[in-house]
Length: 136
Image 1 (cartoon, rainbow, N blue to C red):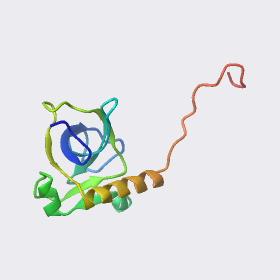
Image 2: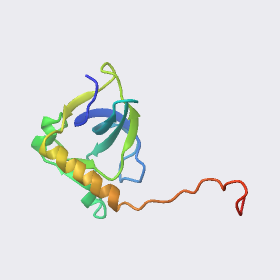
Image 3: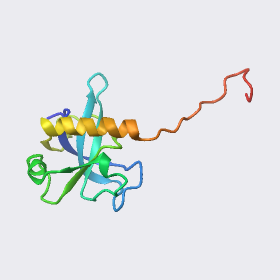
Image 4: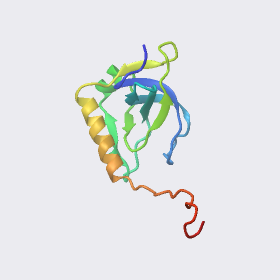
């Protein structure tokens, strides 16, 4: 089955920020959004590592029953809302879909992601100077 929003799939997630005890590896990820036109999807990572206190508000501790229903193991699972990776959506033969997080938990995840993106500082990156402008 081709992944859709709400699915939990296994992907080679690369952390954008330091996350204690974790690095790039194949891990379960939550499919947050899929652009149907170009097949690009955004995923949030799921980890066993408890978040640091400064990140706790941007991480969801998944209830064990919810995690089990999504095909995750019995250890405590945390869904990280303040970063994501972008992938080309795999075909149904490539996808490692293990379960899904839908309904109330999906709404909680969207709200957490939205809040995290609004509260996370952004760094402005300037492009090259335009010809004829000072410093060009």
